[in-house]
Length: 168
Image (tube, rainbow, N blue to C red; front, side, top):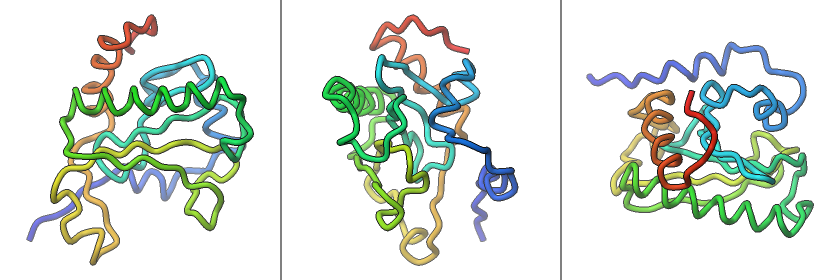
């Protein structure tokens, strides 16, 4: 019998849930590698999802605390879409997926885990990556640790986009 190991899920189950909004708080901490922030823009930033659906699961998060993209300025909306394209390019370059899921869960009925601060998910997909686990067992199998994934993606982000943010 094969075992599925995803120890970071236990951290999520047992950790004390922080007060406030993690999407507002994380970029203020100036600990990008610890917070899995890959790239900062003027209006939004790109980070790895700490509880991913698949390896390389990225999120684009506006700095502004809004629950719908309609609450963002046109400039912030444009940057959000530009960062979706950045995610697609970086993931293609670094991980060579066969396809992508890109989307937003807006509101609790739509599946938003954090309802008050909208964000966009970019999830790389590979042919056959779902297997039977999510279909029958409501379980996702992640085969790469978050820190390893960050170390794989960060140099590609820095090389492709010549960021001035130092790797931590």
